[in-house]
Structure formats: C-alpha cells, structure tokens
Length: 447
Image 1 (tube, rainbow, N blue to C red):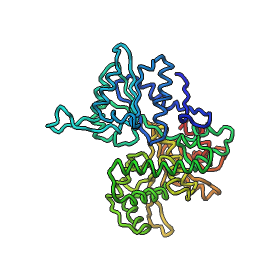
Image 2 (cartoon, rainbow, N blue to C red):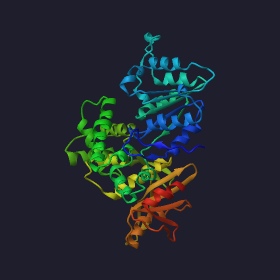
Image 3 (cartoon, rainbow, N blue to C red):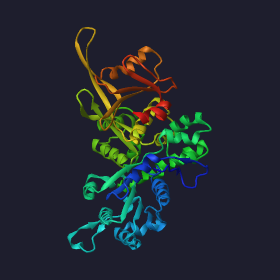
Image 4 (cartoon, one colour):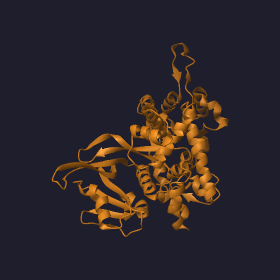
C-alpha cells in the first residue's frame, strides 16, 4: 500500500501536508467493486480535497491517465448546467470514449443535481434524479463512480432503497486531534488550546491569527451552514427559532435533553412558544446537514436502548464555539464533545450508557437510581466504556466518577479520561486512567 500525503487545503499559505490515509484507504479498497462510493460530511471538512487531490494523485501514481478521470464540482457556477441529470449523463457518456479503458467519475456535491420530470414519460408524472443517472453509470463495467454530498438527505431511506444496495458510504470528519497536531510540531503546547477553541476544519490551520480563525468560523456558521439549512428546506419563517435552538444546544452539549425539555427552555429563557414538532424537525435538519450528531441512551445491564432523553454534540467544536461567539469555553463540556467526535471519526458506534443501581438508604428503604456512563463504544464485537472526568483531585471524586463503571459486570475495557497530562495507571477495579491528549494521540487507536 502506498503512503499517500494530502495537502490540507488548496493553495494554503503554509507549507504543510497532513496524512489522511484512513479515508484514502477506504476508497482504494473499494475501487471497481460495482458500487457507488458516497463520500459524505459537513461542508469544508475536506471531502473535495480527498477526492480531487488525494485520491486523484493516488490514481495517477498507479498509472491512470488524466483522460480517464472525469471530475465535476457541481456546486460551481460554471457547472450549473450539469445539475440537470440528463445533461450530466450526456456529458459523462460523451467522455467515455474507449471501452477497453477504465474510467473514474468524480462528482462533487451531488445533491445539487435537480430532480426533473422524465421528458419521455411526462404524462405519467415520473421523474429523473441523480440516483437514476448514477445507477445507469455504475452498470457500465469500465466506469467507477465516486460522489460527495454535504447533506444526509441524499442518504435518506428512500434514496438508499432506490440505490438498490449499490452504494458504499465513506463519512469524512474534520481533522481529529492527531491530524491537527501535525501542523503544530514546532509549537506543540499551542495545539490543544487552538483545537478546543477553533476545532478541526482544515482551513483553520491555514489562518494565522485568532481574529482570522474566529471570523472564518463565524462566517461558516451564519453564511454557509445556517443559510444552507434554511434555503435547502424552504424555511421562510421561524428563522430566529432555528438559530435560538442551535444556541441552546451549543450551551448544553453533553447534557441529556429531548424536545419537551427544549420546549420548556424556550418558554423560560427566550419567552417563545415553540412546539415539540418544530423542535424535533429543526434538530433533524441540523443532523441532516451534519452540524450536529446525537447519542442515544443505552441500558448497559438491560442491553436495550432507551428512547429519550438523548445527547447532542457538534460535529466540530469550533462551530459550537463560534455559534456562541466564543463566549462559553467550559473545557469539561468541550472535552466531552471532542472525545465523542474522535470516536465517531474512527468508525465506532457511540452511545450514552445508563447503569441501573439498586441500594438501601439510611432508613434501609430500597432505592433505585440510574448512573451514567459518558460513552459506550462499540465496533463489531468489541466494546469499551469511557468516562470523561476532566479532573479527579481526590479519592472521593474518583469514586463518584467511577461509580457507574464499577457496577458494570463484564470484562470490557473501562477508561477514565482526565484533562491533565498524567502518567497512565490502572486502579484495583481494573479501570484505566489517562490524560486527554495521550488518549487522543495514542490510546484511542488501540481500543
């Protein structure tokens, strides 16, 4: 396997390369597997760079000629005509000139392609969209199709059904901390501070001042992400409610909530009456746009999911901070959000754990309570439990933070992550303690 390096951002002002082989190798393994490779992720996280630079460079190193690589960025005005699916199909097929050669079709922001009436079956009301075009292309033996998209609506259950099991999703996240640190080798002490403040979107590394980093994120939140949600979903009213909801979620990351609790928050904090249905809808829109992720509750002992409440996290912590104008920098909540994102980026399934605990009170009455495990982490048949504790200054605090972990009667790994750089150690209950930076740079890859 070739070791491939990727420029973190096109024409950036610093001479820096960051390896992202984790994603590149996923594409390489799926070449000509008869399926459409669907690269998803929030806007500006590096999808286009992965496809049009990193993967393209790899193909050329393998001897693929430029004429065999057809690339289109569908969000660019110069390619607007190809948002018509029939125009797109014609353009691609006109460039597939030699049946003896393999062709790679790279399409950026595929959701820009419109759904139109089928001109041949117009009287029947049938339509043609990007799914129809892609399925037609993937059926050609010498064509390999790769697409990107910034909105999970393109991966709705209906669309996946239409793909007829012919699509593989590769989800891209902003830089994880290890990748981010590659740009801070000469000043490693500044990496954590910048990462917890500005997050891991690639452009952040190329901005040289705090003012530029902050302004970039503020523009992204308000002029790109929120605008995209509003325009794509035809929201003409209640825009302030949409923004207020994102503010509320940003202020309580890592807290269990549900639409009813959020409805009450609107009443008491913003003096607005917002329905359960509206809140649920807007939360779904933020998740569709990859701005937010959610973690469901899982009953560890009962081995079942609990409906609500759930937790919401920002896909990038810099966007969360920008949404609040960098006014709330509670490092314990930020640390929890970062751990969640890093686990998701590495392909783990992450839930919020609940451990039921029965005990006797001082009057010898039976009591029952639920103890929380920050993260129940699964991949295949492997599992571990992780508690984000920030600091454990004394034995009483340690017992408090590990109470839930001590009551899980299985042999899976149990980890407590603290903010300080400590020497990793294991207590008598088999619980492993480690500092956040060492966890992100070394431990997480070996879970």
